[in-house]
Length: 297
Ligand code: GRG
Image (cartoon, rainbow, N blue to C red):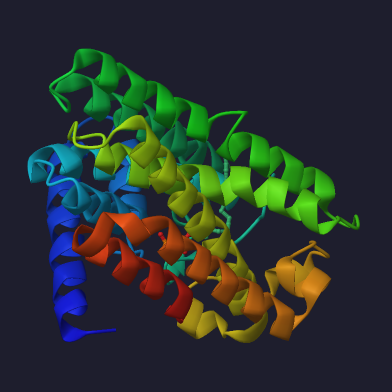
């Protein structure tokens, strides 16, 4: 990773942190416990991969950064809501997230449930309150796109499939279906919402970009499975080895470490190819792709 990319990514991460901090209700705002839990869950942690993708897609189309910031924040809020709910005892039952106790451990289960709910609605409040596109119909489509990506035909549906697959043997296409929904849908939304903050791309180009986003969404998950198998809890900031412990089908359990690594490289290559005709404007998207593949946590 180049120093130039590291500086850009640090700037984006700091920028989204400040924006999220400014839009989350203050801790002295009633109900205090809920607002504390929301800020605890969102602020001061995470790689911010989805905001990085939204900013990189925004740069591809020279979109207004203030608009992209709102889109990036909305996607990150949905992501954090999903983490808070995923960690609950009724789902993954985890105690560590982003290097600190999970929301329900630090607060309580009811507060964690409400935290996820409130982060989700805040995401849509942000998307709906300011002009994000010069074309109102496109902004409506952005809101619908994030809703679809988050709901039963996207992330929540993928999570349902995941919960149902514990202890089962999945085929590779079934595993792919699960992750295209559970993890991929939101990653795709991050890229597409960033790009739609400007009217620069035609339908064919948007389709091409969506194909790129699909490839990196899957690549993200393959790498996640590899890290779960190979990295330590201390490095990850969340419990390592959970997939095998919970008897979950993963790319590693189906393909083995070496083939899973090869698949991540193939998806990286496919992602690059999808960006081919965008030329130099796609530099940041290529760099975020490398970051996703090379990440250590
Ligand atoms: C509860 C509706 C609902 C959905 C949960 C995304 C998800 C669905 C659960 C998260 C469980 C998980 C570990 C999924 C694997 C991929 C993933 C989303 C990892 C966490 O994302 P990162 O690595 O996390 O971007 P940070 O903390 O860096 O933001």
